[in-house]
Length: 208
Image (cartoon, rainbow, N blue to C red; front, side, top):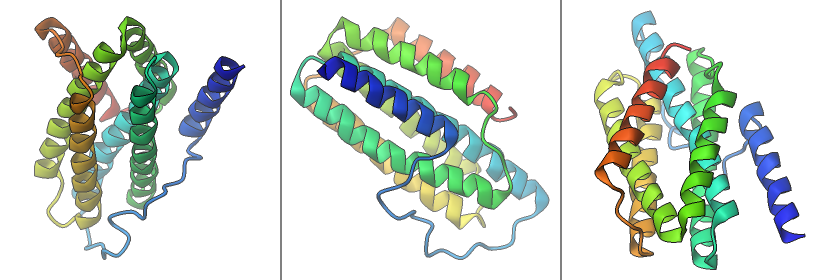
């Protein structure tokens, strides 16, 4: 029965993620910031970058849901659940910012979610240490990706920059927590494969 309940919860999370029905538990870091005027070019760039970040959060929801389903140790499941809650904040923040910028979410979000869910299941079935190691490597790559976006976002777009900065800090914390629980190091080939997959997603979501 517990497994059935977990599957129902996971399916509900997928539907809410893809429908944009996720609400943040924490206020947006941009909540009290005024938006300086942006040129059309700056607005388009910010919209594209925030769409990529929103896709990343869609994938994060899928990964954590899949890994929670396959975790054996209660501590590992608790970590996945806690991280997923913070990623829900990111998901809501980035979707709100997309709307403010007049940009749309990726048209391929269902594809991104499904692919990330399968990756999470595969990592989780190998074992908790590998699953946690997958979290560490994923979050470190995402942290680097977000740092790059902070370099690329228009200086005047303080609202997007505040959101991305908080997301970067949260991702670093998720990686540190997973590492502290005995995460296994990912082989170089796995890390390269993850980077290649992330690159394909980033380039595609920037436009579609």
